Image (tube, rainbow, N blue to C red; front, side, top):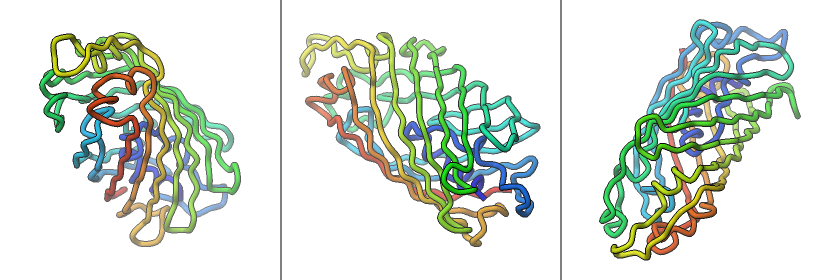
Length: 281
């Protein structure tokens, strides 16, 4: 019952730095009916997200994002913002479940859709390709037989020569169905960055329209997201079409808040909303 919601909503949630859920919610309690998630399954779809034009911006843009998630040959595929994670631990135990694998994503912060002309005058940045290990643990049946609490952390390095830095992305998610055909998820996550990352995105060189600023690493942001998913035939367990809605808030911290790109031209308070549709088979 839980996995269809996770499959249809994972990419939108993770676009806001929420952790993956699917590997933690695939099994119904013992004795329940068979589900589409008992073996190989794939969920695909598309969504639209309304979010800041860059990290720390007060201009908002609409972007299309793909949805893909599943389990093939014992390997679980979970979405990431601009990428995906592969979980190689085929853990179907009834208690705590471990996940471990590799995550990869594209980071296009300030690489496109920069609406502020002053920020744009400092040039568009290169797209970073970030890769690294991903680990997590999920505890099902916390408050009811179908809910779960999941903890996840990705540690990623840029291998494309853009920021050449590292990010650490921890998160926790509580998931529960509210009926046979609908479920909700609440996620809290944060991002820690090193000096190279902070310098690339938040330092301001002298001689431009904004005051010079030298950024250092530290906690970059923290945020929360609330998702609602509805299966169109009223049964989350049998696959098919699902609709979702997502709302989120995050707060820039440290030098990502203090940089003139945020403090003068943008806003440390970041809001987002998204809608999407997915099909699981």
